[in-house]
Length: 150
Ligand code: CTP
Ligand code: ZN
Image 1 (cartoon, protein in one colour):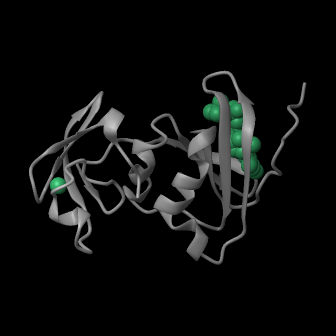
Image 2: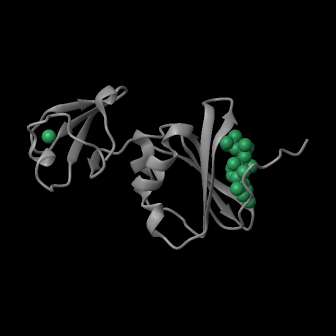
């Protein structure tokens, strides 16, 4: 039986599927999708066997370069990228946690310089499961359960 699509198919571009429903807008913000002129459609609170409820984003005529997409691994570790060409899925990719996180996680240390001066945060990933990020500036570790996306 044909599946019903809740969000229309796209001709060319990237479909980011299996985003936890509550993190849709974080993914949009981390990728800066609010600033690009491409056509974008999305759905949220869709049923998912794996996640319970998921979000999906479809960006027409956009093909993410290299590890650009890995930035979303912190908020959508199970996300799957589908590259669409002429309506067909030509490639599927998973996301991988990058070695460095620049600019979208808050340092847990209230005394860290990044929390009182306009300095971009910067961390090295020292553990992946659970996530542990070491701040480049104060060397304190921010753990997964303390993570705040900025
Ligand atoms: N899709 C789309 N436009 C197309 C082709 C596919 O928007 N022209 C979307 C589908 O709606 C789906 C995703 O791309 O959300 C992946 O498509 P497909 O591999 O056909 O779906 P599934 O087999 O359900 O993928 P998976 O189980 O890997 O998540
Ligand atoms: Zn710090």
